[in-house]
Image 1 (tube, one colour):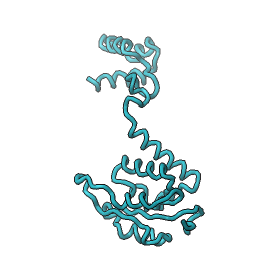
Image 2 (tube, one colour):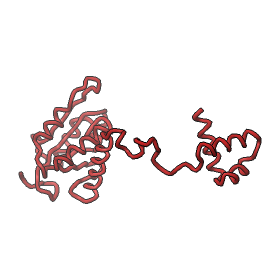
Image 3 (cartoon, helix red, strand yellow):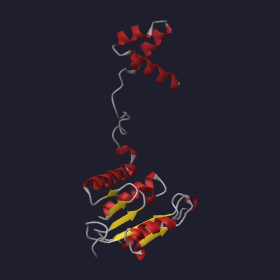
Image 4 (tube, helix red, strand yellow):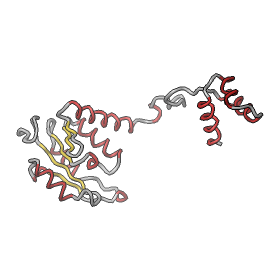
Length: 195
């Protein structure tokens, strides 16, 4: 491995370019990567690939096959890591698992600094959560929801609906149930939208 010429880490800089829309032409990505000192022979690229064909990314695969721990993958923007959020997260996870750094020129993201390493760590964690079976996610097994508990249970909501149907004003019903008017309005509106 040779010293990194564009930063302080030891390892090779490996460029990755992925064609997309006209705003991200492949040639301009490759030019930008060579301008920061990446050897043209170490820039891997993938052309426009139809999602429907199910083709893999041979350039990305070649970069991962060549890279060693301590190397850094450099992209123009994190969106070049994949076509979808899931693919971007999985690519970030792949790099983190292989101890390959990531540098994104547009976002100024670099795993050589603490903030950049933390961001890529979060991306990798999100990829792990995304692949986690639903039964292992918090609240999924019990059917409960994540977040604050509901202010009114189903019985209280039924009482509120009955009182409202009988013509009671919302402030009176809210005081009776011990909740704010806003909570009662929101709960009643949610119930109407479910029906």
